[in-house]
Image (tube, rainbow over all chains, first blue to last red):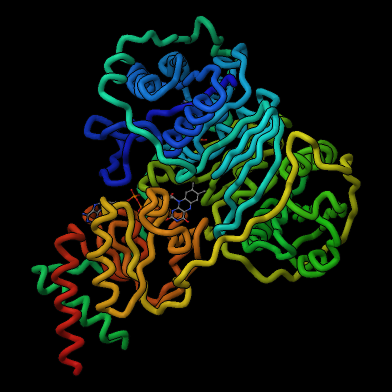
Length: 257
Length: 327
Ligand SMILES: Cc1cc2nc3c(=O)[nH]c(=O)nc-3n(C[C@H](O)[C@H](O)[C@H](O)COP(=O)(O)OP(=O)(O)OC[C@H]3O[C@@H](n4cnc5c(N)ncnc54)[C@H](O)[C@@H]3O)c2cc1C
Ligand SMILES: Nc1ncnc2c1ncn2[C@@H]1O[C@H](COP(=O)(O)O)[C@@H](O)[C@H]1O
């Protein structure tokens, strides 16, 4: 089975302060940490599990700056056979649509039975790259996938809907899945594997392979701004004792104690 | 002037809430743009849907066929592609739901129509469409302009456009689908209902909910102790379930449960919108988070900006004291 997994390196912003830079169109990145996008770690694990079961090849692809190669090396250390980086620096105004077109250009000549992406990138929050890529590749897709069982060319697939409801689909390969978190237990890469992966070659492609003029964006960013905080919580202050007494008071007042 | 389209989302016979939000948003835009709103219904035995939605749109475009009994984005795509080519609406609205996420990017790409997803706000200026989206874990908003085109497609975030009463009397128009069977490459088989667990978090007046900030499964015992001291039940955000630390039936949010307790205490939960939609109906929300900019503080009534592991022991003692004093 030949498998491709798309991986994005993203800023880890859940616990960090996110500040807009002087251009007004980007964030200040120097104090942020970067790592593999959360759902991509699950997509990668699912890809490795398939490869372990059926054999074949696993290629990891990322559109990013040179740092994305660190993320690709994690994929190599965990079990990918080869990796491709598309040089983000060669392409301007990268929205999700453009990203999907570039990913397509990078993988269209590879053989594949399954393409994996994550279900959402936590930086741009689109949830569109996987489905768009499937459409561009001309293969069927399923989003928010939480279970995959493949036999021959048939896949039994679970999609997660709202409220915990699951949709069971039957699909025929080749196919593209966008993977939801929790589908598996992503492994850690061993130190030896990481060291070995450091020496592997990563194929880099850019404007000389993909003509930027042929790739169109759907959206252009006008400005970034901080969301207006509607109703803002009353922040309780004081010593831990005082704060706790206030909370206990609030709960008591509501008649809940 | 070309129309505005909105896709009716229904599942297991019921119209999904997002449908009313799409239609209400569509009506407002149609009024502003001096055009009409068409609700697109793909379903089977749609008479009830049509009756319910008649007041919500100027026109209902109905495709009634048993292949639409259940949602299959491939069948939707094939049919909507025909409808779109015929009508060329200026805007096609869908929900940013498991349904819209699966359909919109594929259909728009096939048609070559510029699109974007998860929009919180939309604004038409001349022929240009500008939308507001949230990025970086909801910490920033981005205003984005779509590539200029006679038509656009977008998905809307739920909860951003209030549903409204309609006073229209929509005409009904029927459309035939070019498909009559599910394609081999993607067949809907069945729905699988969520397993029923030992506790029903939707029944509890007090929920003590933990997020990734709990760091380790071992730390859950602190929270369980606190919850029982206060007479509540422990719930959680998605990453806690993904990690296997708590059962799926404890998860609050869009892909978990919607809860409306009297008191919701959120511990180490950032406040992603998929979580917020599940708990914003709580009477009182108290959030503990060490990040003062965590989006949860825009939803909570009271906030404590600190380490939850410092807060919890003291708070538990205080609660016990107050309880004792009450006698
Ligand atoms: C289709 C889809 C459906 C989803 N459905 C759901 C859903 O139903 N429910 C859900 O919850 N999520 C859902 N999610 C995931 C959601 O987007 C977020 O990823 C998730 O809610 C984040 O959970 P969290 O707040 O626990 O973790 P994080 O976002 O990682 O936040 C952890 C928080 O803990 C704080 N913290 C860390 N340590 C401490 C400490 N010691 N003391 C105090 N605070 C601390 C941090 O400051 C941070 O704010 C869904 C996502 C998708 C794409
Ligand atoms: N720059 C990128 N490089 C590789 N894969 C990407 C990139 N951007 C998005 N993806 C893939 O598409 C998924 C969904 O991203 P998005 O549509 O941007 O939310 C991600 O989880 C990745 O698997």
